[in-house]
Length: 396
Ligand code: HEC
Image (tube, rainbow, N blue to C red; front, side):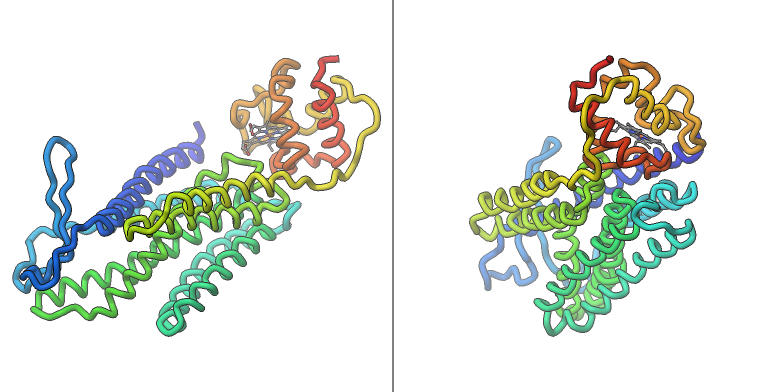
């Protein structure tokens, strides 16, 4: 195992664990908030915001959400901040290991836009910083007076950035870059806006004062933003498994549909506890996400070349040996892939025919193979290989 792959495994594993803890916590608290049994007004529970009883792990939990009287502050108070920080840190580490190192080979796609490793990293890292700065400044100013306008602008900026990334980076990197950008904004919200508000609450409680409610309202607003971003973000994080999404020529449109659908599902899960109709609207939003993904990925690019007549196995093999075995063989010659990626090897006719359907998908339909077209496959060769599969992937 190479150092690069080892770091990839370690960071990815930790990222998943931290991410489950962070998002899991945040969903649990959201759920708690929405299920509190709120005490009737004026019955002496002035500071209480509600109670809830749960059963889990062999006993009952009685949880009350409330403000504390001065001096009532316990010695041990649990925060939930490191889960988020570790998720972000391991995510950024993954971005560096997978996308910035090795000449930024996964980030740059010369057929999308040729650039140097330095340029690609500068754009990627720069847009992350800029995204937080613009978003935060907007919500500190415009967002205070006209939250509706700020919301619309935030969506426009997010979609604009995602679209822009597809014009700059490889498809899979464009998706991930969008996800890292959302995750960075979410982490900024936690550390720069939500945690300071909680510190204020503690300080105010200690001093026996009421907390400035605007601060907690602003923190709540950021927390809602994070809440809506979770579902789209989680799709992006697994999108690298689905070449027909990020590899599609309208990959940005697929992403828009999934983001709208995902955030929409989250919305109706949120309003559920306000006693509103939620199941059918949530299903409708899921249909927008999944249906959009299905619909858009069905749009085919007009074939650049059409092949008349038969393409036999000898010709298919010829193409594969010229364009694929550099990576997909028992001993790849491409220095970046000392082991065949995904253990896909094209050394025997049987292994080739067994993969015929995937080959057509990756080479002809979404053109995500050869990897970043590093072996300079031509449109003609793609069409020929596709035709061979269409004719039944025969061994003659
Ligand atoms: C420069 C290296 C490289 C070359 C050349 C290359 N591939 Fe790949 N291939 C990869 C990598 C990396 C992966 C795994 C990542 C991914 O799926 O995008 C992969 C994965 C695949 C998969 C499996 C993924 C799936 O969706 O099931 C198929 C099929 C595939 N390649 C076919 C081909 C064919 C056919 C060619 C030649 C036309 C080719 N590759 C040329 C690097 C390469």
